[in-house]
Image (cartoon, rainbow, N blue to C red):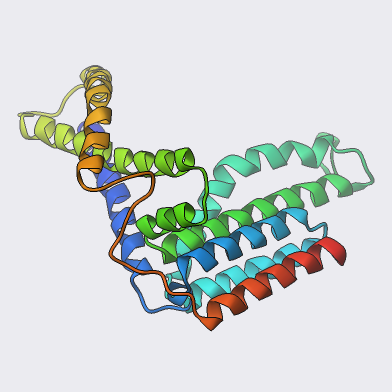
Length: 270
């Protein structure tokens, strides 16, 4: 099992990534709380809340934001464990590496003394907590938007709100390109696996990895223009055009008013 783990694990990870994308689209079609809001109102509301999260200087306010995000995820029929796992994995992998040195390097009164005379300062602990909770809450808000809104609707809302066309184009191309590359890599590894008569040694597995990466890079260069031409032939121009017509309801306006009120409260009170 250990000898052929490279090809097996690669196929599993690629398929898992594709399944997560399909899973996100399924959640966006559910009849949950946030799925009922207009994508334009949802996008503006999330942006206002992101500004509020980045502007607050109170740790308890960030905690309240995070609890509200988790409650919104539950009401939007998003599996809570899946949502937390997505968010916390990113935070643990990246933000913790930045926040960890602040525990020891930030000057201030001592909070804990670890073996070896290593001191964790109270100011450093507060700084690390602020960074972790702020990034966690921001990523949670962005994840909430993506999981409760079909990707094409997000791009269409960006275009309608007059975001620069180049940004919408880059996001659309990146999303489609990642999917196509994953499908291409999946086909290549499946074809390779179907031709293996015995488990490969580790050295040959590394050679296979290098050869696959080179072929995939070569294909990506020719695939980039084909992707854009295919999108244009299907009516693409600056941002996606979908059959869904956006309808602005009273609850969309209420959400925008609440989001704006929260932002103003944070800016002038917190």
